[in-house]
Length: 115
Length: 112
Figure 1 (tube, rainbow over the protein chains, first blue to last red):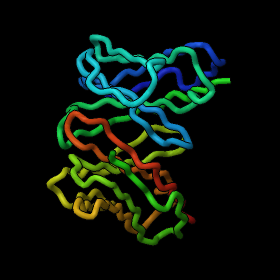
Figure 2 (figure 1 turned 90 degrees about the horizontal axis):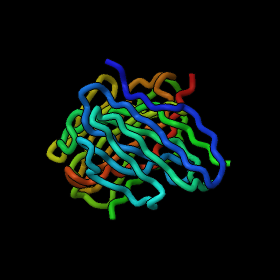
Figure 3 (figure 1 turned 180 degrees about the horizontal axis):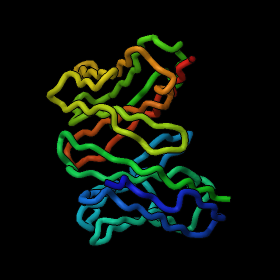
């Protein structure tokens, strides 16, 4: 079974641009969640989608948005990029969201650099 | 507001030693707690998950314990190997519909 796939692996953008990141979950997993990882703040939850509906949202500005398609693939979008958006963006999929024994399976991430 | 703390931020240990990584959390009413491993520039791999009613979980050389009343969890690694070098993160969830909250991790280096 293929793991969680994130594309692209690396991305360089300039301030003010927008970016779209993609995540394909493990086959059969209907939940996808997104995280931002920076050296200063660590790993922070962005949002979670289940069956095309946003199930939970972290404390990020509205410039950060996401969506999930009927095949469970997910995209996140960041508009009007700022230097502070430079980070490793990770997505994870889960076969049993909300269960007490829920396990998360992470992709390798997209490293975004904003210049 | 739940806060998850991992001390120390970095640790170097000679190969073969047993070691303990610590995780503390401020609100003891957790739903579950997970330990993850992250290699440089990579995603996270789930190591052990402890449900709220459980006290510990074991997988190979790894053992994780949970003491909700004191707000602490430990990850015990037996007979450490250079391949164990990585960042170890703990994360808690407060209820089934809540977001997961991560500690900032302990960067472990096993000296050959």
